[in-house]
Image 1: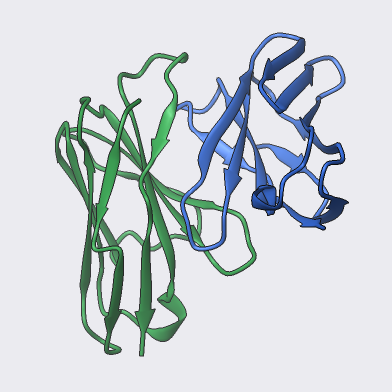
Image 2: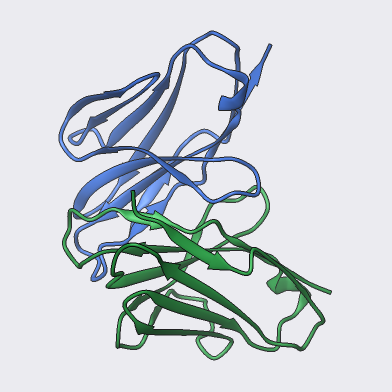
Amino acid sequence: GQNIDQPTEMTATEGAIVQINCTYQTSGFNGLFWYQQHAGEAPTFLSYNVLDGLEEKGRFSSFLSRSKGYSYLLLKELQMKDSASYLCAVRDYDNAGNMLTFGGGTRLMVKP
Amino acid sequence: GAVVSQHPSRVICKSGTSVKIECRSLDFQATTMFWYRQFPKQSLMLMATSNEGSKATYEQGVEKDKFLINHASLTLSTLTVTSAHPEDSSFYICSAREGRGIGNEQFFGPGTRLTVL
């Protein structure tokens, strides 16, 4: 199975930068996803990393280090609407269905 | 992008009744569909994985006789919560993937909030 750890809660200020970390342990790593989830809604896809390095997409960037079992999601120029839970999910090649396993999620609160 | 719908979005039922939730892939054929459950302030927990035309694979601790999953076509999977009880109240989310390839992304439905009185 997998162990996926991320902080439970974070608080940041509007306009600032915040980094949400995720560490994982898996036997057959096959990609790491970040999702955003607003309360009462389904997750929406933010990013996908399968190779080491930084993937940038607008205000959001995601970094992966496979050797360290580590990823982070970087949010720049924070806006109030970025207040949400951010879910780190790992896909394991060894699982028959190649499905995602989710971390506990990080609840981000953006304050004025 | 690919769209996955769920119906109903909200359902309130009495204890002991059965509730069916539908998950549809609208613009692609979903070879594999996944059902997740999410309790308040918790992350998504995978309940089962279903491949079209075959029986669902349930995660440990999920009762297959209580949560019936049918994936009879490439665009539709249903989850039936039988004899629902208040502890089954939760947010149920399906996701769908086109093909069995390792590069295929999962697309999530909007979720169904079940409240059992």
